[in-house]
Image 1 (tube, one colour):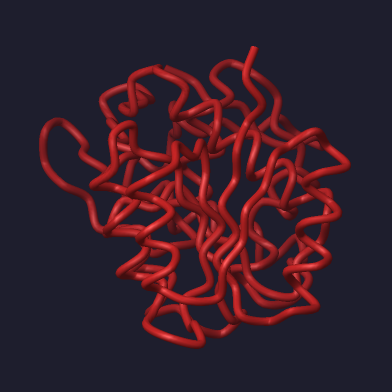
Image 2 (cartoon, rainbow, N blue to C red; image 1 turned 180 degrees about the horizontal axis):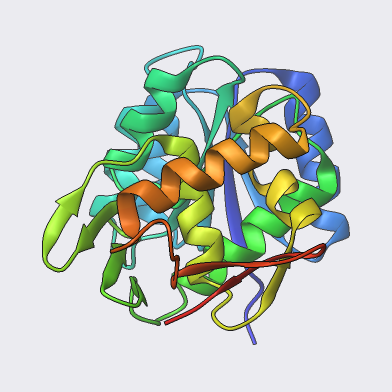
Length: 226
């Protein structure tokens, strides 16, 4: 079975060294560059399973690299590396078809979890996930309820994706915190988490006062229903 190949597009040498060591220790094959033109050339000549792409590069930008990745055949998954307070880049990246994003500085365990999730979602399975009458087109980061597009923030989208990927399973509050910590920019308290869940329910539940898609498991967390 061929090794999973990851392209690292990042102009911070220290981050490149850290990422390369981490990924290779997990059995991934890596190549790296700090330039848009070199990244595009690599994507045109080499098959990659996933690209980790910084938005700001020494030459060019990560959005052009993402576009080249999505034009490649087969198309690798893309995870953007962003500044923690750069919501515009986060949303723009998702709208371009990136599977995920993670804010710097990131935690190694969370990054590896995001990589595994993105690889699962692009390993030949349908990019459309369903949660009741809500459909999530992961390839385009578009959410529809009953056929009508629903506008979600980047944080709400990440939350919904987490539940849709774990149907009928308990998702602990700690797992939810880990999934949205980067978006929130700081530790997520219980009260803040409740607010985020309420906002998402208001947008995707038919009757938010009696939720069926995102059910509370008292004292433990949440479960995605049908």
